Every structure is written in C-alpha cells, then in structure tokens.
Length: 360
Image 1 (tube, rainbow, N blue to C red):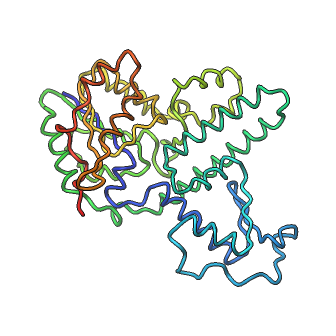
Image 2 (cartoon, rainbow, N blue to C red; image 1 turned 90 degrees about the horizontal axis):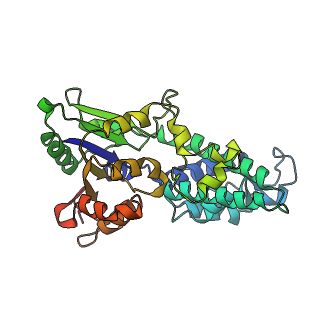
Image 3 (cartoon, rainbow, N blue to C red; image 1 turned 30 degrees about the vertical axis):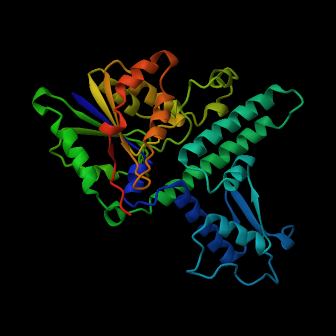
C-alpha cells in the first residue's frame, strides 16, 4: 500500500516554529514600529503610516514630533497593542486596500486559510459590484487588492526566510514514531512508496528522512526564494458557486491568485495526481483541510484508490482535541453523493492518534 502524507502549518507549529499568521503579523508590525521610531514614516504596498498632525506635509518634514513611540528592545508581543500604540501617539495608518484594513481589524482571529478565504470573498464582492453599472470603482479596487496581496507574499517570504530550521526546530519523538510506522507499513520490495505533500513553505518535514528512505517530498505551495518552485499563495476552491461566474468575466486580474494557475508553474500538481493512480492511505499531519486547498484535497480524498484517511489530531488539553472539527473540515471536500464513502474512509477517533501528545 502506498501512503500520502499531508503536511500543514500545524506540523511546523508543533515543532515550535513561529510560522503562524500571528507570528508573521507581529514581525511585520514590529518592522513598521522600528521604521516609524527611526524616521517617523513608513510606506509599502500594504500601508502608509504618517504622523497625523503633519500628514499633509512632505514625509521628510517632521519638526516637533513626539519622542519615539517604542522603546527599542521592548516592543509589545501583541500586534493589536502595537497598532493601538501607533494610533495613541497620533500616527495614522493609511491602508492601501479595504481588504488589508479588514485583515488588521480581525488580527486576533485570522489564520492562513482565513486570509485566502477573505481574499476570495473580496473577489466575489468586487465581481458583484462590477455587475452594477452604478458602481465605477470595482476595477481600481481589484488592482489595489492584488497589489496589496502581492506585498503580503513578498513580506511573508522575507519573514519565513529568517527562520532557521536547524536552529529553531525541535524534533518530536511522537512524530518520529508516526513516520516509522508508516515506513514499516510500506513494502519497499513491492515498490510501494510514500509521498509527502508539504503545503508549507518551510522544509521542516525533511528532517525526518534521509537519502535511503523510499520517499518523495513535494512542496506543492513552493519553496522560499526558489524561482523554479515559487510560492503559491491564494485560493483553490474552483467548486465555489461564484468561481465559474468570475471566470466568465474574461478578466485575468480576478484569477491572478487562484491556486490552479500557481500550480501550473511547476509539475508538482501533475506529479501528485500521477501518484494517486495506485491504492494508497492518507495521513493528515497538521493540515487544516480548509476550502482554500479544495482543488487538490478533493482529488486526493474522493479518489477511488484512496482506501483510508488517518487524522493525526491536535490535543488542546487532556480532555479536548480538534478531531471532530478536522473530520468536519474533511467532509467539505466530499460531494453529497460521496458522504457514505467518506464515513468508510476516515479512521474513527478511537483508532486515531494525536500528532504530538499533550503535555500540561
């Protein structure tokens, strides 16, 4: 039996790597804070920050400004506190798009899947607005949205490039055991293989394997600073009822960050599909299974060669896990006529394992 292992952001977080949306935004806000502290001004394609009482002057003309708003080395560990501190000191953030402003307003609740879903929601809103002949700004707002989204990808790649796997990663015995069991269940003599589908931009999962392992690793969302396998960051649910309507607009700007077109830059997606032509089990390690990746996950889960889906759940406490939520998330990738097959494939809670055992 072949095995397909899906690696998501929860895998990195389980190893102590600071790769969450909150970690990224905290770094980004601190970078803004440090620039404002030094120059009383900051601007990129996401936001422009000016001193409110002098904002109509030339950006380089800042007499009589207050003392630095942050004490060096003592920046808050809360993005919202940093944001509030800016406003309290009369600095005004001018967001380059309403999408970006909304992201900052929901800063405590968002994760990577939410960002991608919010992006698509804005596309739908703009699509509806464009159909209204009275609304004249849809195209310009779309261009602003995509420009800001591009800047997010640029800043994200900068941030993740600062993470040193060798320095920051803390390998887990539990995960070593999971991979050992999967390898033992794969018969190399029968040419059975293991495919790791890594949805992260980091290569942390590589730390668990060596050159002698009969394993293929595909970073489906790209690698950092790699022009041959560039970052794919966007939305991937072509089954959404609005996707077909948006596609018919014949405006490629609406499709710029759809994952199917990001996948077209490499053979990664096609290589995964080829692997699915033989019987296999699926192992989900730290992947949210959100709709943002539906394009690929539906192909993997509903495939007739997929015999079992194993959930390695997150233990929130000694008594609480995310197993049922994960089950629900997986169910959204099955068509209504495939729900019975889904229930046969997904391993029940009592036969599933935590990715890493909870420690109080």
